[in-house]
Amino acid sequence: MKSISKVFKALSDETRIRILKMLENRPLCVCEIQYVLKGSQPNVSHHLKTLHEAGLVESKKDGLWISYRLAEKPESSLHAAALALVRKSLPADETFHKDRLIVANVNRLEITCRR
View 1 (cartoon, rainbow, N blue to C red):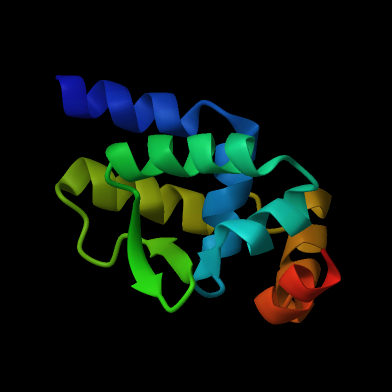
View 2 (cartoon, rainbow, N blue to C red; view 1 turned 120 degrees about the vertical axis):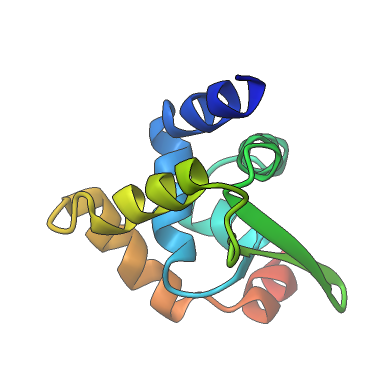
């Protein structure tokens, strides 16, 4: 029951849905997601923690960064269904389309060098 609650909690926030949609394209680090969302690093990290605890995203150390991606092997049929729903939902949504364009051109090295 706790697992189900975590999945639905993770999916109940628009920002977390945006993050999941961004991760459809490729793995991203916190700074890249922060750049797209124009949010704070702690806020993005909090959302990623919620998604990770729900079993919807995975993380991997990548040099100086931690890269996040959609869970490749979902824990259960619920997790698989949730990720499939996110993948198929809202393909024409303007916000997701804009995010996708920014993700296609975002580069973590350029972002960190600008700071």
